[in-house]
Image (tube, rainbow, N blue to C red):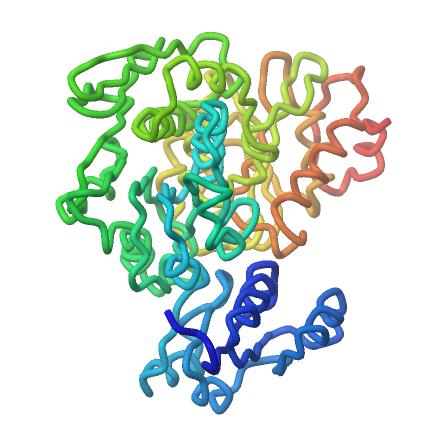
Length: 470
């Protein structure tokens, strides 16, 4: 891809956008940028923009600006359905994602990981397994640093393990990873996609350019994945919690069994720090990829025994009076919450709600009915969740996350679990899911260890509820 002297517009100036601008300047492009936020909200990047002499459009996007470009690079959060983008495409302007741009300058193998849930955990597991084998591995994409920072690094890196979101996959044209992993597909981001099928289509683009010489790792238990697996041209390996597979990994509940090239090996699940049924799936996918790319069985086992998982993803916070508190703030969709509830056998007090993604809540009904003793709902989505899920269990609403934790604290019984797993994004009340999880943990850490179990009453009892905080 020849970028020298080309007029290139970068849309969106978060971390990926800024890294893309820097790369394009180095390639000799005539660079400009367009940002929906006003200039006064972006003070942290103004000095860098002035240093690069970038022509800027603040506070929105204009078609005139987009139409005079040779190439447009969209940051992951930018919707390609924006009118200026559609007009540029209609005129023949090439519109791509940062992942696609970076790919044209990468000359080393790529392992790409996508799915509605588990992407980050699986990406990090694979990266650690390969690093521990002594390989030079870059971990990037939707986790860590943008892929654009890893281009032309063949002397520094042997392999790149890249987490890719549906947003990033929307803008690919030639992106072709040597190994693609599709963990699962459940409803998500329907506030962005007009139809569920559009979201599915974006995920499946990870296989778009793969051929017989490439590898694909697929979840055999996922009905949506399996409905489309016939379209995958790469050599396929499967993982399953429900059945044995000929090539890939499966579990008997006590171990993960890996079958590759006619040989079988076992990885014990006992005493692993990474807990949860969803993480068994993530581990199976990671084991297949790591073994295919050169990690030994001993290295894989060593990483599995030390990997503790992600902050904000089914993260154990504290036990108070025999009640265990878990932070699953990263559980921002229905499928993620289902997996989390499946990980507990005893009664759960579930704290859920946030910015409504307008996804179908039906898959949660069975698990709310069977596992959730009490549900405490917060945020923009709480009214809809009360209507659709509230009748299935004891349900109350709270005005804040802190209040929800305190209501849970007052009603929880010894042996139960209090789980923050919102099934919603956080932007109605917090900057991001990390801030939401941090607030949850802070409130839990301040809970009194000794308290009388009481009928919690409702949100109006704010004064007496706050007595439960240190």
